[in-house]
Length: 292
Image 1 (cartoon, rainbow, N blue to C red):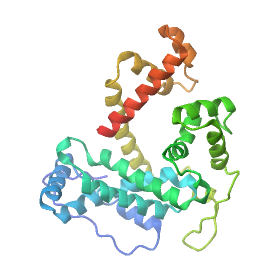
Image 2: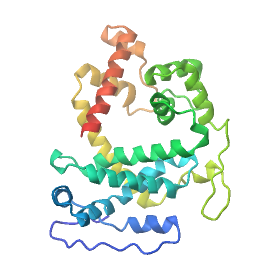
Image 3: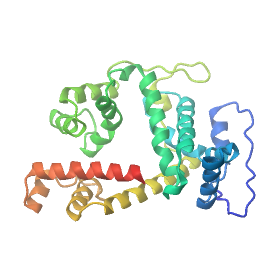
Image 4: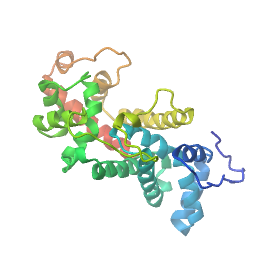
């Protein structure tokens, strides 16, 4: 991927009428990335002068990010083209609100808006998740899979695991069990229609193992940004909180990390106190990452 230098003329390839999604994705990968200096220059022009061409440059250079983010939601059984379209709306909102004087890159700021629009689209259009009507239930819907992985739940959650997740997300244990059943595909079948008018199940929309290298590069770029944000956020924690989070969530080993009781014995406090420290630390990390 080309990053333009400050002295390079900004000649971008023009999007021609595209017959399919693959063509669109190949096209957006051609738009070069902007350097930090160029990004700030365009953002200031748009913010202070209302320069729409500057806004266009900011949007085009981040379209590949929307494609990468959209792939994270293919398992919900909705057309990727629609996910990208909604994500692009979020990107444009991010560009409109972006303040270059805060010292952060647009990619970090845009991630929140892109994901927010995609989340809303999924909740509006997926019959199976009409149960997710409250803020807490939406949080459960979008975080259940990752929390299951953290607890080592490969299949349906157990009662004890559901209780842990319920406490973390401020919902009832029954709500966790019900949402898990729905997300496991045991409730309402999904039958989206593809571009050729064929009815397909959710499995048809899952990413292939041999994904396009362009996707992988975009994902790696996003992971690099998120990793830097996480490291900065961890530095904002006190040593004990940082050590607990790293032991519970960031261990390099594939083995299961220490339990609350293990850490309680190590620090000479109760398991409940360790849980409180962990919850407060995770909340602070999220706040710090969103502020970057």
